[in-house]
Length: 317
Image (cartoon, rainbow, N blue to C red; front, side, top):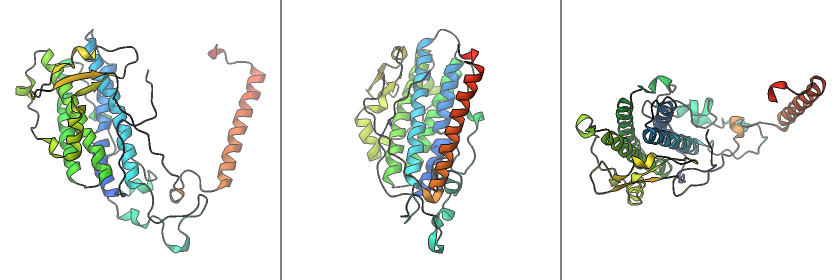
């Protein structure tokens, strides 16, 4: 059972639209080491967890739940980077493209025109090359040590790739989101490394994490100075044993301490997505809306009449 708060885990910073930056960020969403994989991998590991190692279950599941918010954050960022056909100023029910000039003429020049053809200027469950996300990316070995090792590799590789994506664009919208994810990936590295240490695994010899100083990125340094790279959240309403693992000195051996919290200290409003008449999203004219309303009214009336004749559904008693 999950609960949802209608807010973002990190603010989206405003800048100019940049469809090419949005496509690069698709790798961080739907790539083999992207947020969709981390979300599904940790959730499936928690759903299939065996035995009574509850602190390890709580750790994996808490990170998995956080990854849901990361998927949400990236999709909203991608949409912001590509949202809005340039110079379209028509009314809601105007027919786009008046005067012979294609409203979205620039879309065909972008690296991923599917953002405009398939997604109505929104995020897609694909990587930067347009390949669909695959469930085969998800690793759930059924062995706690192997799962934790695999998760540490996943977080390390994902963080490395996000640093590369950061280097690909100076767009503030992209960099703010990617910087946050770099900092949180480091926290997750510490979580899985700490869990391995409690099991007696010398992970540093078996799996050395690539060493690079992400604090050289100013957006990342600000987050590291705030300490979010040493926090982990469990998102549980009924208590969690995550703190039995995620505590004490950080595996990075840099003098920092790990802190378990129920949830992030701050949350941020979700920016509303504008209607896009040039994408026929949602409707293009009032007649279509009238037809949709009539269909809804007809369905509700039909259900009431059938219920009156047949009586209550016994399956709902």
